[in-house]
Length: 455
Image 1 (cartoon, rainbow, N blue to C red):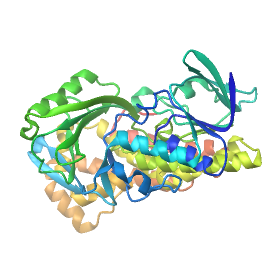
Image 2: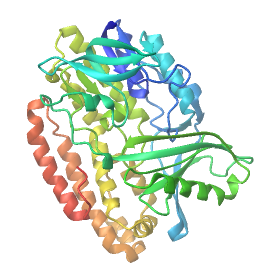
Image 3: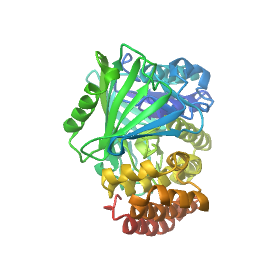
Image 4: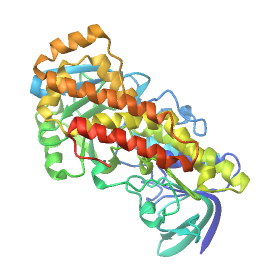
């Protein structure tokens, strides 16, 4: 059996739904293929924190998803540093919210349906179809034992981290980024915990380092009595030991005494720079499938929404002109890099820095740094530090001066990288030369930090 559409989207997450809605509302035939059933669709492991809650693409407007915003009173991060017996209160710029992710997932699906997208649940994609010239022409899926061929002008890969579609597609004639390994990904696990008494920190996102690995625990208050409690850790760590770290911390926090757990879920997410190119002939990857996640915080909802918008806009132009070549789709890459991709690449430099630092030393240094500048670096990829503040920081961090100096050198390299991303190529032909310069900058990062190369 075969079905024909203008565009096929694989995955009903944020990026997939926004891509589908952007194209469907212009009158094109769009199918969204989702492996989960209709009830479970939208139910994914997530920290539930939403940075940039004030701005969403118009295809599914903010007012449609606002009913899923359960706590709009959060305004800062609370970093607990047991090694230094201190707590850092770090402001978070822009609008922040904690959401009910499953409800949000259902609302964006409803929004895409309202725009005209057609959803196919319980449908598992097994292969990608291509022409001899490499053009992607659709996907092959199975539903209830039946094989279905979905033919389309454009395929949007919104299938999440380590997308199966990327294993099945021949990218040899495209610039699509295949420099992807498991070590560039993080595992995440979270529980929804209900407590008897309101927590005192219901206006904050709480972070805490794990005891035994490069990772962190989080406590994000959906409400003052419903907490998303979870952890993230690199793929090369032992997952069950780290889940035990979360359970141990929960048992030893008095506010969680007598708490009950209503939902448990795990997932993988990228903690890397965005793909250098997420396009091929007839194909675009969006959201987690293209590394569109803040590598320092794991936040990815707002970025995924805009990636879906940009991919949808480029798909419309390609379908209307009959040109679905990578060259015709390239503007999608450029829009992503201009909006958030460069910033995420800069933040990845700090992620690399932390992999080469002892966790106790790192926490000690962070405890001595100015909170407002940490906030600026965490969300913008860089921070400006005046002479007076440098002197004060040097005094406060005198026990960690060598590490602070290494961080300062790393910051200068991150700034250079951000500058280089401003010259991201305007078409695929310039990518290789641009990558050569970027890779030279990354060699300097590894030499400065002593970190194991990530790419």
